[in-house]
Length: 288
Image (tube, rainbow, N blue to C red):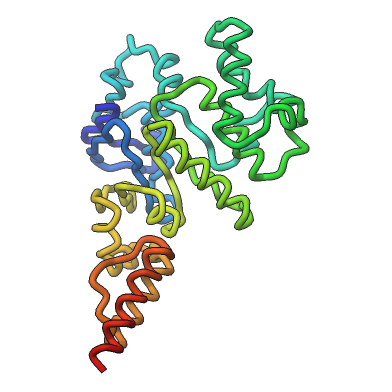
């Protein structure tokens, strides 16, 4: 399997008076082709956990194995690992550094010692994958981009290295609704059409419900839940108890159930909610 985590523990400033324990005995597996959401309250350890998946951080105890490679092994080829596991940060300004869009996306392939023609092909393909027109954006100054365009460029720069696993860390934070929907559409396409394994870190329960197939809930550095998405959202009180907001469609369904509507399943999207509510309303009218 691509990722296997066993009894992972990690602290910042370990061995000092300022030591802060962040992860506590976490074990999990992520299979090839999955779309896994990692959710949890602010400072719960989500990002710290995910940064172990491409060896930005190494286990202090326990182990992380990625595509058969044990990340804490002194002989491990971590450069090769990071090409297989791409990481897109929440703030694209931490990731973009070249003058133009094309130069930034080309950086990774160039460092793989590829021929110029192959680098160009990778840049073109990656830009197409994220919906950036090559002729329009290749020579565009990075600082002339909108927030959504910067995020697409950051994703394209990672995709140009052809990773098998893509980690996306709260990549819609701060975007307006249009920019958010554009990024979510790109992510759906990468998973459904490109078959990339995606690990999606988010504070948005609505996005997690809409995108993920499986959800891992982290709270205070511990794994609270690890189940298919629909099963997780059948536990709204448990999620609320650790400070997570429930998707709005589920809140609406709960209110209607309190008023006597019989709704047999939990909707994860607005479209599902409309279908369920239409059926529930029709049945209620027939009973009357």
